[in-house]
Image 1 (tube, rainbow, N blue to C red):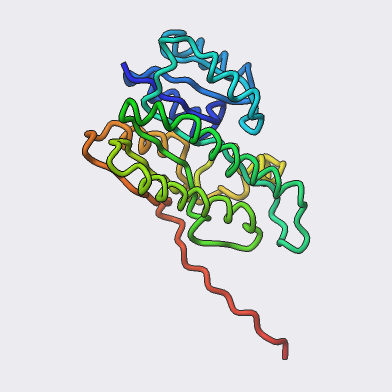
Image 2 (cartoon, rainbow, N blue to C red; image 1 turned 120 degrees about the vertical axis):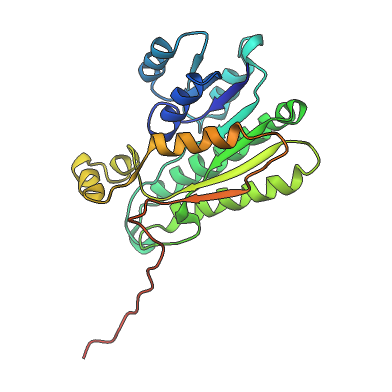
Length: 249
């Protein structure tokens, strides 16, 4: 039985992926800040299928202690899903809150890099796989995206660089780059469930389950196949958005 480690497993894409893999023959280690949600998943999926680790992914000491303390039969990781990430604020750069920028960098970039480096020796030894959750925002910027878009561009390209460095090791590395998916993401970003509902209304967005199914497909491909990067959008969303600022007459 293979074992997956999924960060940000208490909601959205991470929770959906944990549930899907655990019900399809995997053992899943899920991380997140909310112990009660991890406990709920363990109750639902069974202690033999799901193990929750409660910590803030930005807390290096807590993160390393939790992973180093894994029971021996859970410690051999075959799949790392770097899913934990967030966006904060929609203001333009010139009026953005610098603390929001720092939180995004610490979560989306620093924590992902540090965890990846820690897990690489084991993934190489087991010829495992890594899936990093980037974003279409890393390729197609938009007003107010500033540091979020920059952080996801980093994830997209860091993944490709890992693929190059891991050449010959047998480790598969994939960047999955979703567009509009209705999860808690926008609620966290705006601080309002009403604003989130308004944003998704009538748009027929993707769901966490849609992306989870994609992650499962990538993870279960034959070991000689690698999906380098995969960009996914709902049909209602596209990437065309050139604007022109004109002088007022």
